[in-house]
Length: 206
Image 1 (cartoon, one colour):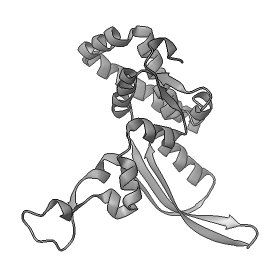
Image 2 (cartoon, helix red, strand yellow):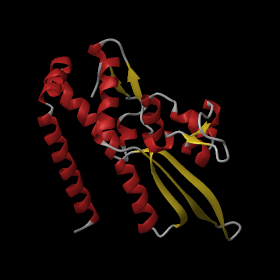
Image 3 (cartoon, one colour):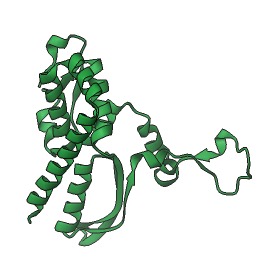
């Protein structure tokens, strides 16, 4: 089985699981259809799937042709994204070959808020193109927010200032601040797409 066939098979399996979950939540589906209408609901899910899984989604939802949604639809997209894909921080050391100096230059690659499909594409690129990389980590984004206690602090009853998160320890304060952004901005940065929130439902696109 080729990689393309495996990827298609995985996507079909994942979609079948999602459909089973939706059948088990008939009440929620009916409520969503009442809110958005069946066709619009299908379109919203199709747009989100395109962003999550298509590496060229930035060409579809560009600055000139952004995905236009209402505030209510944006909330739904965030909820659906949380239900349909795991978000991960991917990081690794990479050696780039410098032709001018004829030697390898190391750099630290950090890819926050990656969808399952993005993680798979990164792994494919690293291994299929025989990149010189090391210390590859793929960490569930939610686990990076768990509170931990600074080593050496006495127990019990530590002060709030004694708590740190794995995100801060592993990646620094810049990525802590980035994790506090709204979902819309995380998606735009991660997938390089543009989403415009509009008030008039007649202006929605795609």
